Image 1 (cartoon, rainbow, N blue to C red):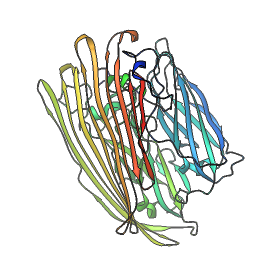
Image 2: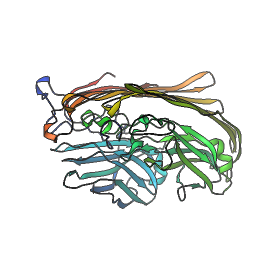
Image 3: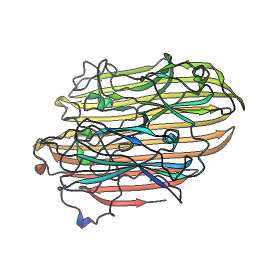
Length: 521
């Protein structure tokens, strides 16, 4: 396992009490700390009447899924302006972070992970806007949820969770999909014959406690490192329709709450997206004319760069469909398919400090049209990926550092209306094991995205996200928990500006105590 000792899996969110004064901060971590909290904005909720439905209530001790049933709310109709999912959890004792999912009618509506508990116990909560799955919620459905866990004499934490949906009646957003589909037998898709827009979403996660949990640190042979892959750390999530490449994307480099061998970085403030794992979206509308023939079509997702036979990636797929209610059949054609030759190298330079330099890039453009009741609609989708990183480590991995940047540029043009999204993910950190087995990790993570919508030459909407996490934590490794003498400072600033408003919040913790909670908007 890489990063000195390896790590585990992940996270949650809860607003607790206000910041502490300096006099209240202990000299080192104790047996309790502030409940997990993130600086991300809460889900906005409309005023007025609402209805709550409990989706799941379970205690996870092993890998047995919770299974139940969902019934639509009786008093809130079947047209909603907003549907909000909320998970509330609690755990105490000793436990790794664990990855979880929630399916309703086979549709994955939520993927998450858990925080690591204190001996005295923590509670946390996560909220997510799930309005786009409204089609699934209009009828009774089977529910399946799992947060795989191990409870024994050492790892005592039982994950006690409850998940609810809150329905807000009102006029639905006309931009919401009409149908939410899953793949039959995991590989085939049959769309309604009047589909005019098709979008796939993939909850791609590298995890499971093996090397793909740290895919961004893998190195090629013959570099002497604990996690290897022929292409080094480059990973790309591809989706294919009937064997033809239909979309490419960069997976988000999620760091779970045991990540970088240092759980003291994450006890209160997790890394970006750790509690609410966002799906990768692919606009497959250029393929709608092909998909609408009434036959099943093969849809496959693969993560390139993973060594053959190595486990660790999960890629469940939902397909969102918009239909032409005035036509029984929408026809169309794929008119362009241009793919660059993927470029990439991962080069090892040996020495007292080993070094692997990685550069990679790939581009794809697809275009097509559909003939609808409101005319012929042309869609062009372009995506350009790039990755650069420098990985340095010493023999024995007693010093291990990475500086990496991933970019994912996407452009979708529909009859003169263009949405451009430029995503940038960054990771800059080092873990060292020094005298007295004192393990120190210094780490900065960034999740940034700029989105601009234009119609012709006029900008119609825009947003800019910058979610930055920084942490510096030290503890004594290879000793019982009460002898670790851990100290740590962590901070997150989440800024989201745009044509729809502003959110700017900063959190800071010291030794597990929340010392700053500041909003600037």
